[in-house]
Every structure is written in structure tokens, then in C-alpha cells.
Amino acid sequence: MSTTDAVTFWDGVHAARPAIDPQPNARLTETVTGLPPGDALDLGCGDGGDTLWLARQGWQVTAVDISAVAVERLAGLARSHGLGNRVITVRYDLHKSFPQGRFDLICAHYLHTPFDLDRATALRSAAHALRPGGRLLVVDHGSAAPWSWNTDPDVRYPSPREVAAGIDLDAATWTVERADAPRRIATGPDGSTAEVTDHVLLIRRTA
Image (cartoon, helix red, strand yellow):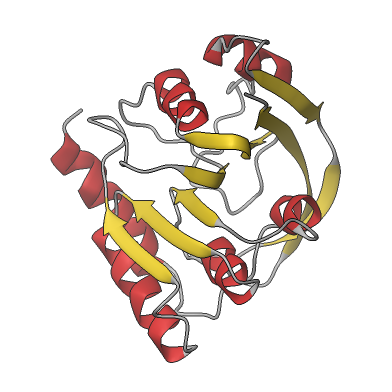
């Protein structure tokens, strides 16, 4: 499928969502709270809850998404919250290339798509874009919420260890600090709730 198809699809997903003040993902806040702020990259920023939360904690955040609707909405939210000087938003297609720069934190929450994306290559590029001591936080779906765009009952969710194996990083340079599958109560765009499973992978660059 073409980039045009992907842009149209994700623009439609975000345009259909109500304009809200988005909240950060629980796995981000539990991982990052207490870390010294630095430069962060939010891959597939979506509604922007993670980006805004990081900016409020003092991080300088580059937020990228394939959807122009998502990044334009987030840019407006950042300005309205007085965070415009801490947030850069860019429409970006990770299937084609990876953003330039060096980062202390890179987060990829629910970076799933029905379109072409070599996730392993993108996440490997993310690991290489970390500064020494920096962390890559990958949070994937381990189950489908009722409001998900993908409710295919036959979909398989790779474990965090499988994702780590696919990235294939040298253990002398990167360390897996966390790889588990916690459950939580999630709230959907319409306010409904459901229990979901997250697949959490945290990698730190040690050299």
C-alpha cells in the first residue's frame, strides 16, 4: 500500500477523534518519572499526550507522526499550553527514513499500522540514535481494546523478548532493562474502559 493510502487512513483516524486534552500513557510516566530531562523523540506521537507530559517535565521533545492532522493538532495544543518552545512536531514517514538527531529518550507507544513499516529497522535506528545512557521505550498492544482500529481476533502480538530479538542489538552496547506484559484498565476515546495487556520493552544504551 502507498504512503498516500497510509496518510489518508491515519488522517481519517485522527480527524474522527474528538479534540481533547490528551493524557500520557501509563507506561511512559512510570518509566520516565525521576529521570533527568533531556532530548526526547516521540515516534508515532498520535494525540500527543506523551509529548505534552514530557515537555511539562522539562524535556525537549521532537514528536513525529505520519498524520498531518495529528501533528498539526499537537502543535496547537503545545502552543495553547505554553509548551511551544519545548515541542517540535514533524509529519514523518518512518517507512522511508528515520529522524536525524541524538536523544536521551525515544518512546514508541503502539507503533502498529496496517501499512508497510519495517518496525525492526525503525526500532534499531532508534536504538542507534540514543546517547550513551539513553533509553528506548517500546510499548506494544498485547491485546485489542474494544475501540481499537484493529479488532482482528486472529492477530498475534509478539512478546517483548521477540521484539528485542527482532531488533537484534549488540548486548555489549545495549541492555534490556525491562521486558514484561502488565495489564491495566484503559480508557477509550469515548470514555469507556476495558482491561488491556501492554507489551513493554525498555532498552538502555550503555556505551
